[in-house]
Length: 83
Image (tube, rainbow, N blue to C red; front, top):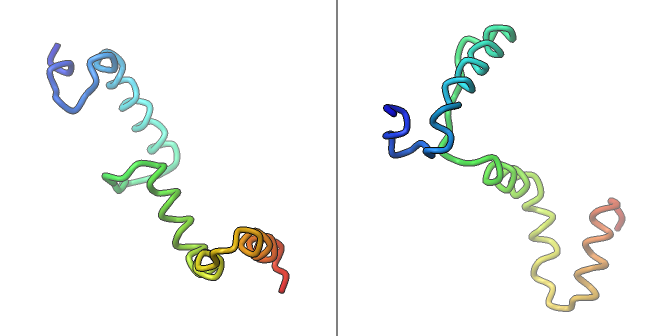
């Protein structure tokens, strides 16, 4: 009941959240990890940010083109590292 009353916790997960915590602690101990860093962003946001950081130059090379055919060909050329 106490966990279910927490505003940030979905009531359906209240009965199992502590089991996830125990599993996390066991995995961290087995891996020899002394600390973790928490983040407010989700995995999806992280993937998008990572993609943009890696490919922002390539995106900028293709994006300004208004002609769909040219843009498609340019994207293929970039994908296969062709001039």
